[in-house]
Length: 152
Image (tube, rainbow, N blue to C red; front, side, top):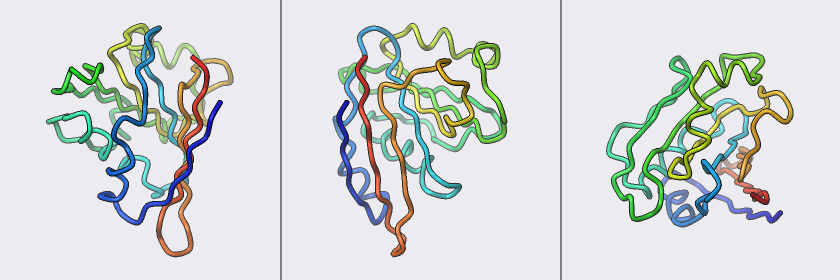
């Protein structure tokens, strides 16, 4: 396990840190958990990262849809689909809930990069991330971002 920590002042600053940050998992989807208080910038993180992947569709928080799939135009980067999941409105997520959202089929596909907001709502040992991103709001309004990488 390794950690990377950086501080950003805005989304443009964030974008400069993201290119090539996440390596593709060859055994299945690359899963990234996003933690932070409400308004910390989890969706902004996904939006910024989507630009590095050349996602053409508009990336909005899927709070009411739960899950949103986006096609990736720059397939030479290894990923073909970006899946964005927001569990804010769900109190408890187990195997059954993930299956009902259609997550299981994405997990088998190594061309998928999956961002999961509010992963704390997932039961232990139900979904394992490759990376865990924590976003902490600083007193000056900047964001401290800590990325923990897990062994695949």
